[in-house]
Structure formats: structure tokens, C-alpha cells
Amino acid sequence: MVLNKNVNGINIQCSEEEEAEIRAEWAASRKSVADNAWLNGRTSEYPKISDQLDMLWHSMDKAEIPGKGIEWYEMIKAVKDKYPKPKEV
Amino acid sequence: MAEQNATNFNSADFTIASGVFDLNDAVVKTIASDSGSVTPSTHGFTVTGTGGVTTSGTGATLTVDGSGVGGGSLVFLASATANDSAALDFTSYINSTYDVYVFVTGVATTDDENNLNIYTSTDGGSNWDNSNAYHFSQICSYKDGSYSVNSSNTNANSYEIGHAGASSLGVSSGSKIYSTIYLFEPSNSSVNTMFQHQAVFQNYSGICISFIGCGMRKTAGDVDAVRFTMASGNIASGTIRLYGITNS
Image (cartoon, rainbow over all chains, first blue to last red; front, side):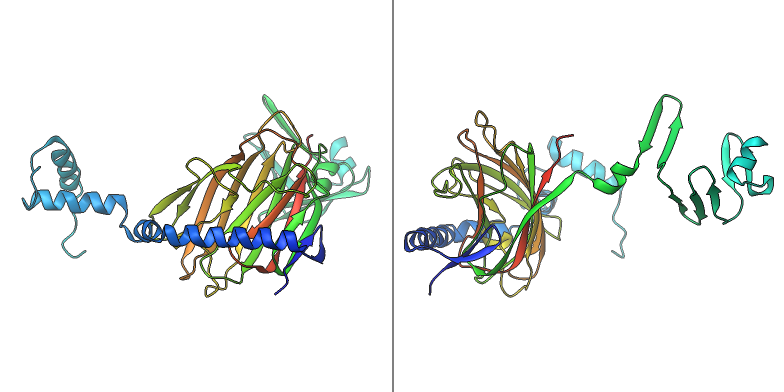
């Protein structure tokens, strides 16, 4: 299918050379998307950083991983203790 | 009392207490000198007449005159409407008239998982800068409060609005890429033309995403044309408008 473009408000047909150039850019873009699908997928589905850190804290708290009692653990715990989560939430 | 007569005020119409001037009713006050009027209302007032409005206070004065209200500083230059268009080009309007130009977009795609690409030209659109010509970075914010950063890292073939993956526009959402894109000093041949954009659209799964980004053309040059394309496929529909911001 022939490509069209709009130049300064006027619709005209792309030249063969220009059409080839645009189609090459589209192809390059599609290749880039395909090559980086794994990265974009991960980026899209990772939980928020704050949620990930909270998961780590709870794993420390349950001694699933070491770290309970370190400065960072205690700092977070102090904030949690200051603002306890209501039981009904 | 002479002032009351000149503005047709009655003493019951206003009070002055603690330095505050209050109109006590909702009656039009005629300014006899030039046939203007002041009309109080619940949330403000309307002033007519050629004299405009002047407010003043200790240490500062704010004046809104007729030309300021009527003119504004955004000058419409051109628009391009897509109709399954491979590109929307602006090749005749960008010059040294304005230091800053603004594009306002509302365009839809024909292909899924897409984004808007921008290219510059220094020869009126005969050749487009499309090979490692730009740097850019944009923060994409999602509805759940999470965000991601898309950047060109080192080089990009185009300046991007939106990106692949979750921060891409899709056909199924029916959304358009709504954005404002600023172009700073494009005609200054001694500086790298800078971009800044804000955008919002629904991604291919219907989630609303907002973008704030910036970037630049990697080499200095007198940019006189700008092209918009989708990363893949045609721009199905929508319009891009170009404005200049008056320098003073």
C-alpha cells in the first residue's frame, strides 16, 4: 500500500525513496521492541519499589532472610510501630 | 461624596471596613466616564469598558489591560490532520520569529503497542535527522503509583513520546496520544535544540499513563522543520497543532 503524508496541512503521496525510509524506520522500531520485549515486560510487571522493599522487610521480620535487627530494619520498624496498621484493614 | 456621584454608587451599596471594600448588592455599577460597568456576582465580578482593570497594593501592582486579555502569547501557526498518514510534517513555520514553539497533539495509531516519534530537519524537510541524532529521557507514571523511566541511554534515532511495552499506545484502548511538546530556540544554529514534553494516553491495555520528558538534538543546528510519525504504521487519525510563543 502506498504511504501518504501530510505536509503543512496538505495530504500528498510519499515518494518511493521516502516510503522506503519510513518503512525501514518502522521495521527497525519493531525489531527494537521485539529485542527488548523481555526488558519491557519485566519493567511493566515489577511491583513498585516500595512494595518490593516492604516484602524484603517482612521476610527479614519472619527470619526468612537475614537482616532482622540491622539499622535499616529497625528504622522501618520504628515507623511501622509509630503508625500501626488497624486490624480490620 | 463627589466620587459617589461620579460612579453612580449609593452609600448603601458599599461598605469599607478594615480596609476591605465590599459591594452590598448585585447591581451593575455604571462607570459613567466611558460607559463601562462593574457587575458583582457570587464568585467575582465582570468589568466592561475600554479601561481594563487595575489592582494595586503595598509594594506590588498587577495590571491586566485590554490587549493582555484579548491577545495572549500563544500564536496559532498551523495544523495537520492525519488520515492514515505515514507522517505529519511541519516544514514552513519554524524560524527565528519565536524562541519557543509548541506542538499540541491528539493522534491515534493503526498498529498496537506504539509511540510517537519526532524528527528534526535543517533543510526544510528534504532530509530528516534519523540516525543517532537525539538524547531523551521520560518518566512514565502509572495509575497504581508505580513509574518507569525510558531513556535513549546514548543515542536515539528519534525523540520519543511514549515507549514500548506498558508505556505504549494501543489500538484496543481507542486512546490518542495527547501531548504538548516544547521546542526551544530551534533556529539558533549555535545551540542544540531542546525538547520538553508532557503527555497522557491509555496504553494498549487501557491503563492511563502520564509522561514528563525532555531531550535534545545532539548537534547544534538551525532546525526549520519537524516530522511526526508513529514508531510503527500510520497515524490513523487526529490532529497536531503548532503554536509560537511570543517573545515579549
